[in-house]
Length: 389
Ligand SMILES: [Zn+2]
Image 1: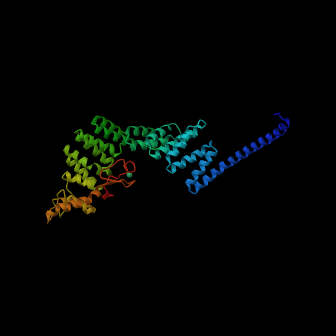
Image 2: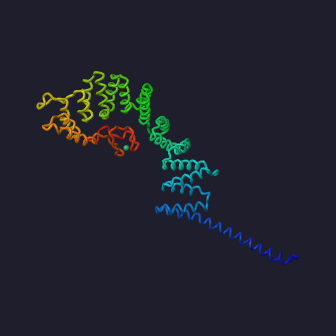
């Protein structure tokens, strides 16, 4: 077939017109998309303000698809996923951001911080720890150290907690010395459990140095001294503590009594306990006094009081069910054969009253905690039983 040049004359302008149309279409499409990106973004924002997070996420995903270079949208989307508890998606968004080569240093730190928050909220503490450690030297350093400290304390990794608290103590405005003393005491407790008493003693000396006013290092020191057979030293430690921390006496009254018996210094201990009891009556101090054979002051009605009369004197001051129960335990009833049953019921009723209660979260326990297992707060338990609060 012969080539007809007239076709060329017709097809060239047609191709030109088609090309022009195609380019117009592309430009219109681009303009449309550019207009759509902010529109979707604002729609997302609107949903967010109306607390419609599902719709906000859809709008932001659309906006991100239209404009994949926008970091702010990624941050907004990542934070939204985290707030909704969709941690895997939040992690994906923030890891995607971190994987980008064009991210500024500031945005990279921000993404790293956001990723650490994702892991923290998801409870993935190992991964959170690694992400937080990467924030050292950034503007999130202090916040990251606080989070790391919380992780180490929660998982009872006391050496690491001590390191982070020391860094915070050196850099932050707040003092962490009491908390650091607690970390040392926790490590000392572990040393005692492992049989390394000299190692524990060394840690406790450091704890006392860090927080000389705090009751715990002295109480733990006295317990260790008692365990080492040095009752005199234990007694002296607690006598000194009764001047710096008299309100905590109910916590160490029993140890003081044991040390006094072992060191044959009962009279000194009794005088001290009686003096402090007058200032601030407490069932623990009373029991220590009674254990030492201490008696309340003689009165006209009771010229020769027995130690157990201390409970009656206590009841005259406060209507304590615990004191009443303890007194009744030593009495003889008219129907003595029923006494054990009655006493058992009373003991059961008084058990919850002998608990300690966290002032921060209300968690109650028979054991006294320096670090609340409920809310992780330090020194949040008043040193008195529930009945005396
Ligand atoms: Zn608590």
